[in-house]
Every structure is written in C-alpha cells, then in structure tokens.
Amino acid sequence: MPRTSSQVAVLAIILISYFMILLDNSVIFTGLPSIREDLELSVTGLSWVQDAYVLVFGGLLLLGARAGDIVGRRRLFVMGLIVFGTASLLIGLAPAGWWLIAARALQGIGAAIVAPTSLALITAYFDGEARSRAVAWYGATAGIGASLGLLVGGALAQWVSWRAAFLVNVPIAIAMVVGARAVLSETPRLRGSFDVVGALCATLGMGALVFGIIESGEIGWGSARVLVSLVVGVMLLAALVVNESRAVQPIMPLRLFRSRERSGAYAARMLYLGAMIGFFFFTTQYLQDALGFTPLQAGLGFLPMSLVNFAVALAIPRLGARIPNGVLLAGGTAVTLLGMAWLSRAGVGDAYLSSVALPMVRIGAGQGLAFAPLTNAGIAGVAPSDAGAASGLVNTAHQLGTALGLAVLSAVALRAGSGSSGPDAVAEHVRAALSGSSVLLALALLMVLVLIVPAGRSDRRRHVASIDQPDVGVAA
Image (cartoon, rainbow, N blue to C red; front, side):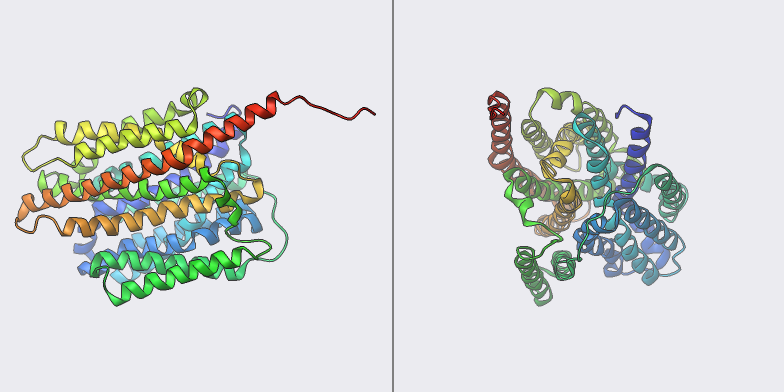
C-alpha cells in the first residue's frame, strides 16, 4: 500500500470506482435468466443487454482516455461516475427491455470514462515504488472483479432481485463522487485543439469492429452484416493511424507503439482477456447446467480462484522488487495456461474439487501473477502527457480481447457436442471453448516471450550502462 494517508485515500477512491465497473461486467451473467423472465426478452434481446454495454464501452475507450488529458482527469472521472451511477439507477428501475438496453448503453459511456481515467490517475499520483504498489492493487482489483461479480450477482439474483445488483452501484457512485471531489486535485490539462477526426475514427472504428465481433457470435462470420461491420471498422482504424501520424495532439499517439514492451503488452492483453472471458462465461454454464449448481452456488464455485488470485496479487510488489516484470508476466501466463488446460478436461460426472476447484487455484495464481505486470508493461516508460492515451490502449485491448474472445470461443463451442444433448452437450461445449482459451493463452505467452521479456532485458542493460557511464563534463 502507499505510505501516506492521502495516497491511501486517493487509491481507495480509484480502486473502488474501478471495481464497480468490473463488477458490472460480470454481475450480469448470473442475472440473465431472471432478467429474461422478468422483462420477457427474446434470446436476441437478452444478448443485447450485455452487447449494448460492451459495444459502447469498447467504442468510446480511446475518446474517454484522451479527453481526460485535455479537460482534466478529476473532472472527467467525476463525470464518468455520475453517468455510471445514473445509468445503474435507470437499469434497476427498467420497466421494459428497450429501457434496460438503452440504460446499459449509457452505462457503457460511464465505464469508458472511468476505466481508463482510473489508471491514468494512478500514473499521475504515484511514482517509483509507490506506483508499483498501486498498479499491483489495480491488477488485483482487475483480477478478482470478474469472479466476485459472479458471486454478488448470483447471491442478489437468488435472494433479492437482479435489479439489486445494479441499484447497489448508486450509493457507491455517490460516495465516490463526494470522495473524488474532496481528495483528488485536478491534473494539468493539455492546451490546443482536440483531435476531432481521430476521435470520430477511433469511436466509430472501434464501435464497428466490436459490433461485427458481437454479431458474429449470433449469425456467423460469413454474414454480410458482420463482414461489412468488420471491413468498415478496419478501414476507419486505418484512417485513424494515418490521421494520428499527422495530428498535433493525437488521440492515440503512435509513439506509444514504438516500444516493443508496450506493443507486446497490448497484444498479450487481448489474447489473455479473450481466454479469461471464455473461462468465466463457459465455466458458469458448466457449473449450473452440467453439475446442477444454483446461481449462488456457481458464484461461490469461483471462490478458490478469487481468494488465491487476491493473495498472489498482494505479493506482487515484493516479487517485483526481485524478479523482472517480464519474467513475472511469463510465469503468470504459463501457470494460467496449465490451469486452463486442466479445467478443459472436466466432464459431467467429475467431482467439483478435482475437476474445477483445483484447476481454478492454478488459474487464480496465474492471473494474480500476470495482471499487474501486464498493466505495468502497457504503461512502461510513458510520459505524463500520454498517460491517458496509454491507459486507454490498455483498456481498449482489454475490451477488444473480451469481445473477440467470446465471439471466437462461442463459435468453437457451437461446433462441438452436436451428437449429444442435455448436460453431456453442455460439457462438450465447455470443454471445446476452454480448449480454445488454452490456445489463446499459449499465443499470449508467445507474445510475452518474444516481445516483452527481451524488451525488459534491453531496458535493464541500458539502465545499467547509464549508471556505469562516467559523467564527463567540460571544465569552466
């Protein structure tokens, strides 16, 4: 933890706000059956409860990140909390499906502001060892947010209502707004013009890409709607690159990609998160539809992972003082891969302890080791003026990875188990999907070993050389 009481207060506000965003990413999963029954939603309508949030969240991330550098991060952070809290209230009061979907889209706007701004605030308020500790806590928050969301969502859906899982955000958001105004000071703002063309290309391009990925899970990759969306998204993102090479104050500075460590971190994060969203999405189905768990029991079923994840993540600052960041990341990714491969063998008649809980312990340990180093690599060596943009890229890789991963793994799952039905079919779907997650983790490990680890070694050699170089001055 940071050493001063003011730093503790700052970090608490940042992490609680970020945790609230992460919680909502997964709390929806265990509440979907209740939402479908309460609001009489079709399968397509139910999918848009999640997709509307992901689409807007992913599309606006770069815009939300860069806007903080220009208008001030505290101001934007507070604005994002207000939007997110208001949307949560509207979701909790939703009388119909269209209302819920629209409110989820509004919630995505708030999340696209709060998520990158929270990481940018860490880079603004913390330096050196204190920043390493803060990022470790940030990584721990990212790691346990999803699994704890399943537990909270399952408990509230079973004991109270699915609406309670969203209404609980309202007092939290209000408290964080009050705390942010009292504790955070405004960060310096960049002067000059806003990159309007870059903002439009980034928002519409990311939105089209995420939309195409989401739709592919429903209607297939060969659909004209999917192909047009993907092509438009790629063209707009290509236009973004061209524009950013010429813009005076780009929304996505291309200099961020000159570092192999950062570029590798963005690629590895997409692959790692693509694997992890498959883990949460399909393991939840396995626990409920193959092993017969209730929503609450399914949420509790993720506790082995959450507890180990949290414990390992807290040890990261001490480990990071002795072990290079890239080595920690490679070890964490490898451990996660081993746990995922083990879990992918689970069947209908298998015991929870040996087939689920023990692999989850390994996955939790790997995630605890990997998340903070992965975040560190994504913001390594970034100037304060680019902190918002770098944070936006970290979160963009996160959201694109989850959207792409879920679409790909859903397609893989649909092609498995065609000859069976009931729990056996569910188990076959889940095994296929988690095998796909294992492949994504293997690719992420390759990225780490090829790009991030060598880059970290080069940086250390340059640092040692600069220390050993004698200071030769000119005599007066």
